[in-house]
Length: 199
Image (cartoon, rainbow, N blue to C red):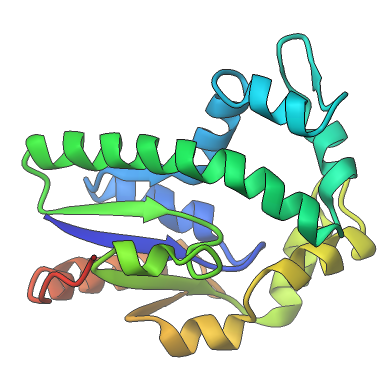
């Protein structure tokens, strides 16, 4: 089984692209959904211990936690040291299940794939991109999003140009869904001819 890493900066259309991979019959692991899951389960106690007051009603309160870590590099590192090992375990369980089901390709949808070294654990990387003005419009239309918050998020993410330079495949979401579906079909045709690369 070949493992595709799917990544892209905020507002690029990565979640939509992930859905279209799933629509094409590919098993897709959603890192964000897994974070939600661990924030309601095994991450609660260690996160509360590291960031007192960041949980309520037996789960991590993402807004409270965000207020404690955004813009604080050391706090983000402490949080990642708790959460990333849990996510990797879930990811491995997903890959084992996909392989047992006989899937020729599986997708790991991971926003910070390059930033966390996840590109070494996949066979090829798909980077989702769009025009900068489209990206900004999409993000600023979200609830609770401000220009300052957006700038803080973008600072944590590798620049889009660098991601595209390092990618095996680039999907441009600027022109609607049908072109994305065609790009995905091309990727699925080509990736099975590639050698396994993951460590």
